[in-house]
Image (tube, helix red, strand yellow):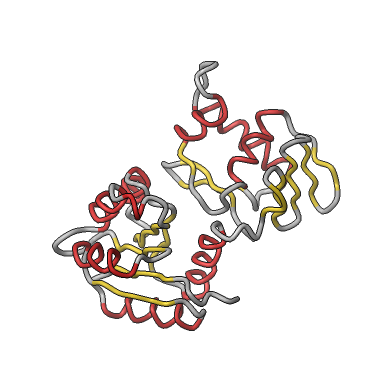
Length: 229
């Protein structure tokens, strides 16, 4: 995969983690920059304008949550991908991260192959490699045609209800991006009807029944995302 020119900033106060992530991302061809706390991370980000920033949550001087919140308020970082490193026990921190504008999170301990795969998938959102046209998505064995409201899996037509289709298209339009329940409600149901979280859960369950369990995953306490195989 040709990643030359794409810049990644890693912000973490643990030298071993910085070195591990930097080594594996450089092997993939990325330009990698590092910082050891949130304040330094913001300074470096302003200099190098990274395509993606990896932030640890717990750091001295300024933690990752605050650094993400401050950078999201700066216009030049409005669309920069931001990914948190979290321990499996830090569910509250994951939720706080998404609330300040994180795009995804990666659980510790770091598994290099999984890390690289996740970063590649996130950055592909900018390339349009999954899009066939403005209204048609082709991802893995799925073809999702927004104009015709049709879905094909491995060439076979899958019948979806209107809201099931709209929910699938929303999630698949940005693979790997976590959509909160509030965001799903706003995008799919708007303010036209009274919809509960249970309604979203039922639609997700129906999508999994029709497409299999691999495409839509749950981010506990936050929402849902479309997984790239």
